[in-house]
Image 1 (cartoon, one colour):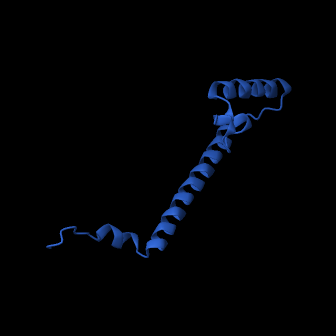
Image 2: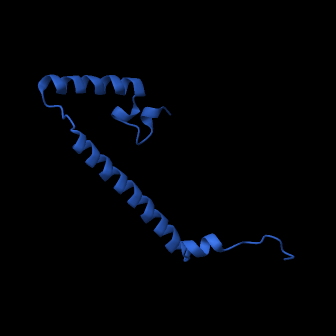
Image 3: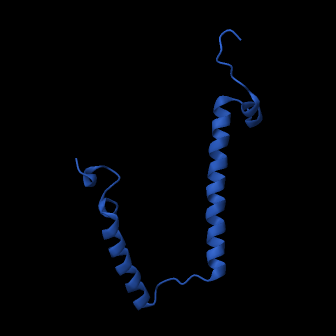
Length: 89
């Protein structure tokens, strides 16, 4: 079975990275020639970076909370608990 046949790797995603880059470059050049390309200001770029960082850290916090809820312990009790594997102890 080839990569193109695997679900989730269809169309643009199934192309090799260099071909994707070439096609994307052509689209970018066309947008600039037409005048429809977006030019980021420094403030817009900072705001986008802040938003992305917030979303990523929030996702990590939620995932960690879900793990803690599933095992029924607080992070402090997990960190301070010690498991002794020695049956004679």
